[in-house]
Amino acid sequence: DRRRERRPSRRPVAMVAAQAEFWYAGDLERAEAITHEALDRFPDDPSDTLGAARAELIANLALFVALAGQFERGLSLSRPLLDSGPGPVLIRASVAAANALGALGRYEEGMAALDRAVAVFGTIGQEAISLSQRVVASVRVVGVVWSGELDAADAAAATSVSEASNEI
Image (cartoon, rainbow, N blue to C red; front, side, top):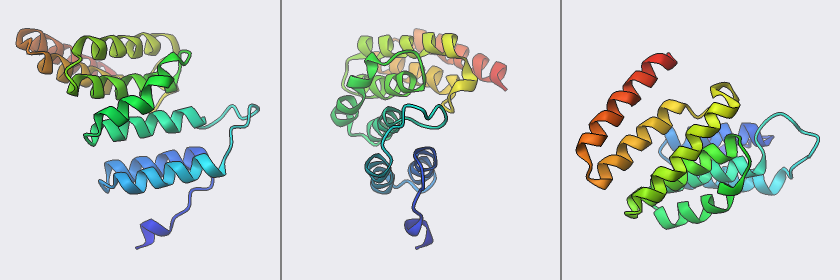
């Protein structure tokens, strides 16, 4: 299988390769292997201002793990990153934590994590991260549904659709 033979050469390439494995191939195991290989092979370089930092790869993996139903593990991977400064790491970690927390019945904590992600978008802008603010809004809808507040979920869904339309 040619897909399994690819070896990302740098962290940003590894992050995109892991995303392709998870989102398009549905292969969490391969996405994890790519991420761990990149973490082992490519240490952070403080002078590198481009690409994905180690923490961003971990936040990316936390999101995959949480979405794959491994909620405790997704929360364990994302929780240390929630203290990150405003940036892509905090947004990804917040979305991962929100998914995990919501699935674990801890809706208010999940919504608080999403609020942090939304605030960071206001600081860094959509252009600074490949994860869309539309995705964050959609996760909020799911969290509100899990909480059982269907009227609020309806309002959140309308806002999400509006934001998605505005983003395009």
